[in-house]
Image 1: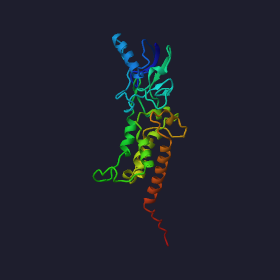
Image 2: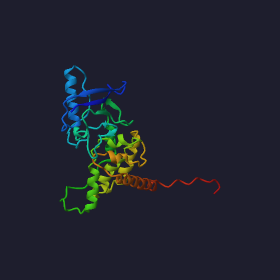
Image 3: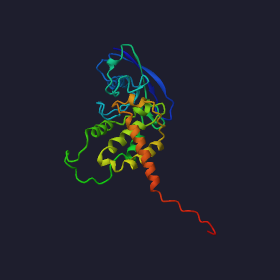
Image 4: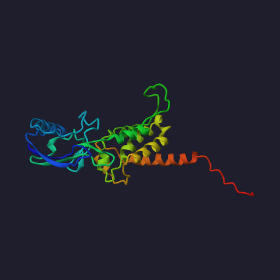
Length: 262
């Protein structure tokens, strides 16, 4: 099988980029997209050319590192599949495949297909944790949690932070990612105490990072390799609204003006 890879090449964010076409021969249908890039890079190195930069780690769809756009779709044409899980059998002999990095202001380009996704880490740092004292780890069955709630938390916790939701969203919003991180902690008894403060802090950081606003288009959940549902955005909005009202009620009452002669 022979394919042509049309890849976005750019030395750094300050340099001008362009698409470059590479023919890759002897492609096995069982290769992943990343393995196909490995084959290309080996040939580029042998020719004394600069290999294509792309991010990867586990190559098992767990770490969320290997994110880029394939033929206009984040992670490629297959649902619930990361770029490292996408095999070449989903393409035909002679196909031209376009590869480009995530396109979002909050994800500045580093090189070729690699972008800086540190903005997602900053959102986690703002409140994606539990800081209240919960004592020693209890017996697993000692804290009663309904299956529905446990499933909801586990579904949200499946988010791997790859950034596909941001890349797929026309507004480059990070609402699905932030909602998932807020939901998987907030629905559990251990995280419920801080759920309003957590939502306020994480949403504020999301806005500060330069992500766009969510308009419920739904492209994010369609591109998500873990199929995080849109419900997490609704919970984020609810927790944020409740936290905003609570914070307003906690403010001291305004001092009445002094009226002379009263």
